[in-house]
View 1 (spheres, rainbow, N blue to C red):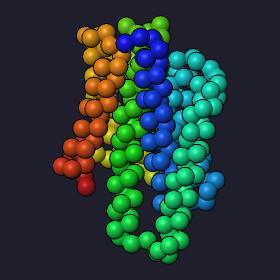
View 2 (view 1 turned 180 degrees about the vertical axis):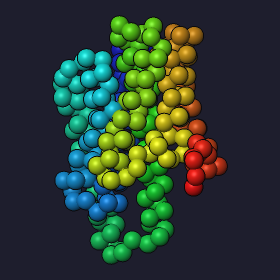
View 3 (view 1 turned 90 degrees about the vertical axis):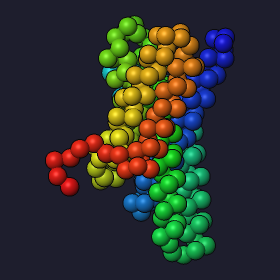
Length: 221
């Protein structure tokens, strides 16, 4: 795959992650009955927060979200489209049924999972491009913080216990996915194959955890 194809692949991955996390952030704001401004802020933080934290750790300042506003614009457009769609559905039905709430939960889960998978893979790739590519711990950590960072900010601002502490092997899925991206890249030398493998495993782990109710042990229930 040529360098141009690789750049296009990374761009597509970034867009998928941005849209997915913007939807999950917007849905979180809507569930908390925030106004349109609050929904936008939550969506923007979810979509760009992990990348901003990653860039600050690696000393890439100002973070990419500020140097290239493309992804901020994509996140804002996605948030407003989501808000308008939900607002229109509520206006028509006037009340939220249990079935509608269940649909919202599923939408939130899937978009949050896709965002986690895409940004975990992207974070590892960013680490592999830097001067510390041989530092496996740092590269995997960059993948995890890119994947979960935005979600932590989203949950904190919406006064929820962060997903990484309580929900369906969330951070662990990111850790495993990041490690897989790194190992696949070392073995194959293909960033695209490595990122796709990591993306796939994060999604599968999250799906299995949600379906079978997998959770890490707690001191008490």
